[in-house]
Length: 548
Image (cartoon, rainbow, N blue to C red; front, side):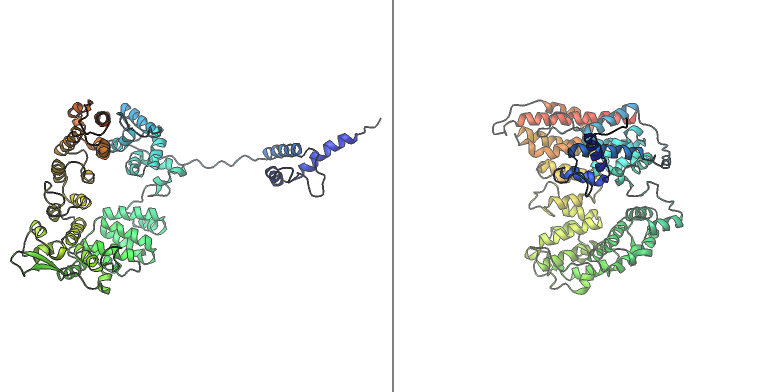
């Protein structure tokens, strides 16, 4: 008897077949829009009775076909091995410490009250600095969390990448998340041999912008004239923003040989390039620009010979001509500034400071700064001298403008601005800087010292550390609001000499709150000092582990 198929069987087998003829993209569209709005059926074909089931059957069949038809991927070439790192391995205790610090970095923050436990995240920079000084190499297993930490915190990157070494750079080349590590070399390869002119020229002409900046910095550090010659080969064809960045590289090793190039840059079509060139030239006291600016400034500021007491007379410029603008004087002042005072400040700022000692009869900087200034020009003149002392890194004038640290902040000799004082301090050597800040804190407390402490060398020298601890103790005993000292306390955790921990132990005990003190201040002060002591001891342990 011949085989026959019932009508029902024919219906159930033909519908899926017709749906199966649809392309995969149409099945996806039908699934997204819904089978009611977009039934899974070919044009002119029947709509299946159970459209959702037919859609799923067809999708399953397509999936099997797609998987069965896949071809094995062509294997890529294995990456070249990382360059060897000859540095010695970390001591075991130091390796465990680093793993703990990096693991704590990703721990959720408790928020609010910090408690008495040290903040391990803030110890990573110090750990890396010591490890790099000792010349250790990073453990291979800790390179990924180390690079993750550097990705999240730009302040960690210089020390972290130095510690990671060639293996870290090799690994960064395999993960786009760590591409920041390759900004000095897009492939992770070391810079070319700087003694090979051909390799240097090829990278300069063909490299990425970040590679070229790094190359220029490297050549500049080794041979400043060679870096200038390299820059001159492509200078006219560079973009304005690139010219500005390249020009900034000339700050390192700036000297008289750079003057002709910078003098030409005064005519650059970019205002920012012109301004930077003028700034660099004004830092060269013997440059022609410095001489031109001095002549203009001397016509505006001079000894006042009309009275019995020596003083300073000021006559600000009445115009800003084209020559002044070419030499970097900006004609349009910021909002709220008068034109004449704005022009005067720029002239004085760019004038070599030695000119004023000659102008005022050989008086030293301390006497010139102390002279009265007519017509309320003192603040403008002293502010411009401050900028000049910072730009020219002149310690003699910096001392004069800082004044004595024990003098009242508001009406002492020199500048009263804490921001300006912090910049002036950077011109002094480390010991003098620390002594000045220690005396300032002893005289005025910590309320205005935060910026000043930030420019002091770490760890804080003995007198400076003792001055900070004594001032914190005085603030606590006086019932001061403890949270207003949190910034200084955080700095102390990172910057105090760990040897101060034993002297601080006595301050960790909770005290009865004096009358009029902030509620709860005693407990907060106790916690803060406990955290400070614990952090200092942890820093001492870290250093011992790395020195073992």
